[in-house]
Amino acid sequence: MLAAVLVVTLILADLRFNKLEKSRSLLDTLATPIYWVADLPTRLGDWSDEHIQSRAQLLEENERLHRENLVLQGRSRQMSSLQAENVRLRGLLNSTAILRDDVVVAELIGVSPDPVRHQLILNKGKLDGVFVGQPLIDAAGLMGQIVEVSAANSRALLITDGTHSLPVQVNRNGVRAIAEGTGALGTLEIHHVSATTDIREGDLLVSSGLGGRFPVGYPVGVVSEVERDPGQAFARILATPSAALDRSRHVLLVFTSDAEQDD
Amino acid sequence: MQDQGAHGYWVILLSFLVAYVLAVLALPQWLLWGRPEWVALAVIYWTIALPHRVGIATALLLGIGLDVLEGAVIGQNTFALVVVALLSLVLYQRLRVYSLVQQAGVVFVLIGINQLICQWVQNLEGVGAPTLLFLLPAFSSALLWPVVLLILRGLRRHYRVN
Figure 1 (cartoon, rainbow over the protein chains, first blue to last red):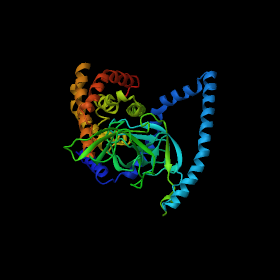
Figure 2 (tube, each protein chain N blue to C red):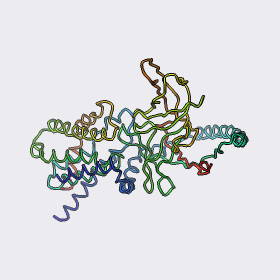
Figure 3 (tube, helix red, strand yellow):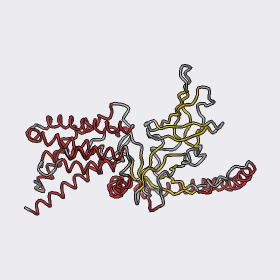
């Protein structure tokens, strides 16, 4: 009986009133070792992959990385001049300068065991300056945001989670929309886009930055399906996330500089 | 006897910790829906074996831990585990004389109830499962029950936990 009352109180306190935020972050710190142990097999696999490699493989990889580095260096040279030009042009247009974001690499130490909850547990926490609401990206695009921070780790909500939505725009023409998670890994749904809007399959969606939470211009997904039913007020649009949501082991936490907001 | 008691707690605690680790172990995508409810299985075993030591209070604490681990609403697994512990406390005398297959049948029902309660709380939150796949753990847990039973009973007898 007592237990029943206690449980109902707990559910209400957490679900309706968000009273347990503090104790949750504390308990999360205690849960870190369990995730650490559960992650051991994967880490062992990674370690053996790294250490048990033939000389030929290493040489080959080294050469490949050298080539890649050369290409990237060339591009980054070009990039700096383009960036300067961009700043000048934005100055002419009277809009705020976009500053480059700082990132910190975090490693995945766990994923939510519940298939309907798309959450990741990362090995960076309050001690590394991680904060709630911080955007998370990988090499290919936007992944999600931080929803819980404890001392040494944090929990991130992926953009495909059923409770997540983010403001996006079509890269081709700037049409704005909201991309919502569907609970299925690999599908985003764009809601409330009128049937006449110019949006096509293959369009790249980027974050629009309108919510004030995600920085502008990170790829979010590619439109995979557009269904225009004349009987419906809105088109049904699905998109595939750009980021490797279920594969990235290393992710980037973005620190957006505040200068952007100073107008 | 005092010493024995202390020893026993250690075994029980360790089995619950292992259950926690198994509960968050990364699984391939296709196995995700069928993950057995390890913590619930451990709770069922220990309440049947030692109803005077493991019961509602243990289930309550374990549930809170599991909620934190899963990032669920605090109280979701707590609720489910408390109900499971309560039912196994009511049923333990019958369960002890059941055959393995009969026990697995009861475990199937218990884990099914566990899943239904979890699902109910998740729906309150708005992230319910879209299909009936969330009942799959009831099957996998019932299938694994004999293994869990044999391992935990072996441990209990070896370390004389009672």
